[in-house]
Length: 209
Image 1 (cartoon, rainbow, N blue to C red):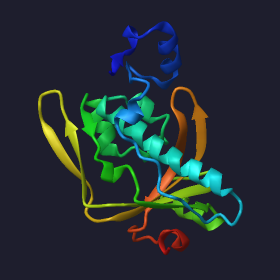
Image 2 (image 1 turned 45 degrees about the horizontal axis):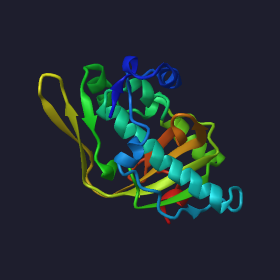
Image 3 (image 1 turned 180 degrees about the vertical axis):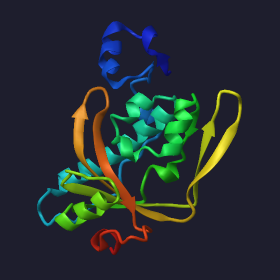
Image 4 (image 1 turned 60 degrees about the vertical axis):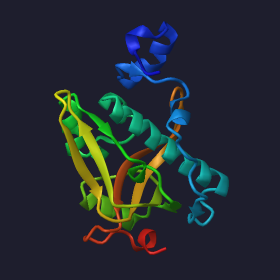
């Protein structure tokens, strides 16, 4: 079970302390959460990445989402910042966590039903830059997520607030890179993201498949 960090063995606490957590999950938390492997990824990198690596990166993205779900459910905003860039943590979630709320994320916001891997070109970098999300990532995972989708904020005083994440199925893209280290294992560390419903015109290649 999830345990306060001061109550776990010193070696375990030392492993988790760099992630600024106050609680430590059980070693099999991703299995307990039933984090699925990613669907077979469409490797659209024209040979820049092997099919095996493309699938590993897509699986890492799902693992990252599983850790994100646990972190929000346990009020661990410090860990979130090791999973995604600060700019990718929605402001309402940051505010809720700062108010000691926990957040219940549904799977429809976490695990895509279909995905692909693309390179990030110069024009794609320009799109992110105009959104205030400059990226030095070379690749982007693009996934289709079912909708509508709603998350719940649970406050210490008993209030529960529902927030709509999406009103319909959505294609989302996350530029990032593979990071692999204990205790998280493989994760996809995103530093820029967006979706294909953006009226400013997201990259056509990512949104047209």
